Length: 342
Image 1 (tube, one colour):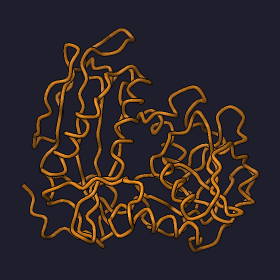
Image 2 (cartoon, helix red, strand yellow):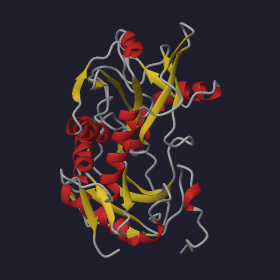
Image 3 (cartoon, one colour):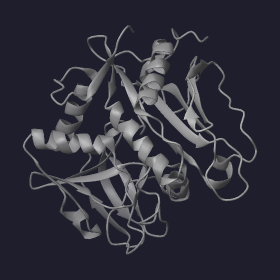
């Protein structure tokens, strides 16, 4: 088992860091077994597993936060459980019951408690629940066996810039997901489709990409692996589309926006509207909020700038949500759950 005394918590990347245990559970013969902990980082998978051939794979991401009061909190894990169930329905996998999801995530946090970064370091313990078809099939049909597992890793900020404005690039020549495809569920294929344009953007000096809708290329879709939002006229605006993953962070920010007196609009957002926003950002579990400083359209050779500092509304939203997650702001919506005993 690792010694954590020498971990530089304040300089952790957002990447994989070996911890002591993960938790696994199999679905066989039409029912789920008992979750078990293991120290192995590896899985023995049949060569004909449907995950490898037909993409029967879905995952989630959530975090455990060490608060100023020393308590460890999970944020809205019930929504992650529901979203994984929705993903399973979308590609015909066995659904993970909420009670099994809860048992697995709490067990894995407790077993790896020493890897929860201290309060104030900017780092958190990231949980990755994973569900995939482990049973063999050669014909295109669902597996009869599934593996659900959860592993954890301490992480730093998703974007190396932290809570500072980043530059993003509009993508017109690649699509992330089709309108009636799998964009609304959290499956690996959506992310694989975005890797090539993201890598090109990184080489061009941009932190991420901004996808447009696949059908007409008129409306904002996702901001790389995150949801997009814009602020104008005291209103929080975020795109509505059948190809966008429902972000739990975005859902929470919408409520916080209402709490602090903003109007909220979830609707199609035309590309041209980007010029009218006072602030813009990307939001998701990994970064919470990543303010957008500028958006570059590589086809039109046009740049929209929002400034080199986070806007006041983005700051308020970020500080409120992070404060709820860490226990320094009152959790009036009962979003957090304390992990007792650690």
